[in-house]
Image 1 (cartoon, one colour):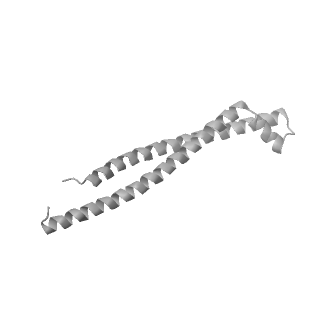
Image 2 (cartoon, one colour):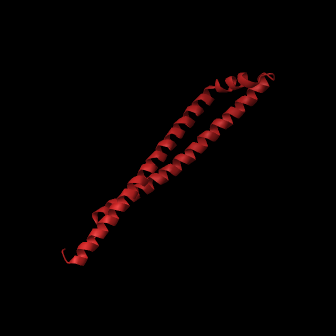
Image 3 (cartoon, one colour):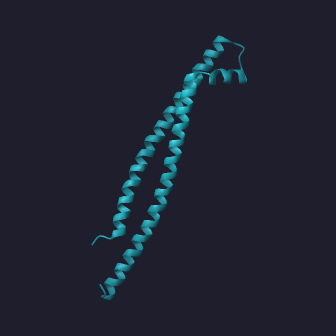
Length: 121
């Protein structure tokens, strides 16, 4: 006889596993978007220095950040970062629920053993 709480735990663990795989994908996407942004910023710094060899500091940073492609890549990077953090929070929730379900399974098993041993089935 399969225990009801064990079945719920098994289903939960399968959903948790799918969320872990999604998290891995989000991390990969996050890293790729961050690299794209940093690459574009480096290209724009080089371009700004070629255009104006005396540009430095804040003026250089402002010139880089004014590029529409840098802006787009930065927005994508931040969206990916938020998605990764949201998935990380869901994983913490999945872990907490799994711990509660495991406790419920243990309680249900103990009760089943108690009733099986006493002959009151």
